[in-house]
Amino acid sequence: MRRSLVIANWKMNGSVDFIDQWTNVFTTFSPVSTELAVCPPFVYIRYLQQKFLTSALDINVGAQDCSVHESGAFTGEVSAGMLADVKCPWVIVGHSERRQYHGETNEIVAAKAKIAIEHGLRPIVCVGETLEERESGRTSDVVIGQLNAVLDAIGPEALVTGAVAYEPVWAIGTGKTATPQQAQLVHAELRDSVESRDSQAASALRIIYGGSVKPSNAAELFACNDIDGGLVGGASLKAADFYAIAQAASGIGLI
Ligand SMILES: O=C(CO)COP(=O)(O)O
Image (cartoon, rainbow, N blue to C red; front, side):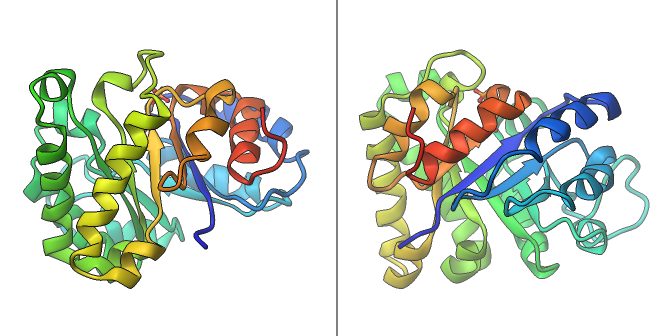
């Protein structure tokens, strides 16, 4: 049995005031069986960690990216070693917004996953096709190619310490969710691809879905065999909505 996993990606949103308000609400909620993490912008990681000390939920902090470099003259970059140093266990790599706006290739994403693993972090490896790729029948090729680049670099066992997030680009921030059937199909293909290398790793690996997940659609997505939770953008900015999604993943309080 895989434990469900729900991760908030706040993207470039938030402030000290926002975190105060969000955590004031969130820390009143009772525990769920879902494992949780919130990825704020780098500058708020430490602040959010302090806030979570009073939460009864199993919730951790993650980063939205890390550098491919170890250290040195790389202005503006934050290294995996620094994230490990501040005890930030999770790191998202290969988000489509990084691929799209920052030119991150499969090779760069694989290098980031590798350096994250080397520092004991848990990478959340994002894969996903654009609308054009879907419409031209290339979804499988694209997402399997993205996954294989990371698998070649770190291997299936290391990947299991983190997670894979399937995020169809056309569903991100658009309100357009993949149907549970569409998502399940891709999740199963991703798992099969890991299975061909290591069957134990394939059954242990958490593959979560991202793209307009909200309280009203979370339960039907998470009911699919190969969807083990969610990577949540917009809806995670509301503490109550994020909690409702966490509940849906824990199989209790279905919406
Ligand atoms: O990109 C996402 C999470 O990483 C999804 O964002 P939305 O939930 O806002 O569609």
